[in-house]
Length: 136
Image (tube, rainbow, N blue to C red; front, side, top):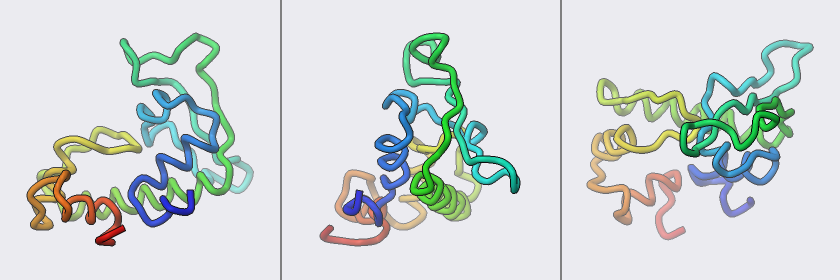
């Protein structure tokens, strides 16, 4: 986890390791199901309603659940939200919001292109994804 702290994978890794979600549930997690300090008497939690599986449903009906988020996950998800908002501003009209916590696909290409990066697979694209740190 320490190695991931300064990368764009930190939120995904923290939630994957500490929340109790299956990997296909983390990949399908949407911001509308993430509740970070909604009020003074509310516990930060995530609602698990979807999975990246055929049909988009969770593994079993009992898999639909709400899970309390550890503080480290709350911190990582706040950072993820802030990074996505920055990406949204950079991409401007080209931003395609799919509501996912783990945004990927065409919107990322728009951000990289706006930043003067030709490809996400290039060294400069990887440096952008790693928070601007080259040679990491």
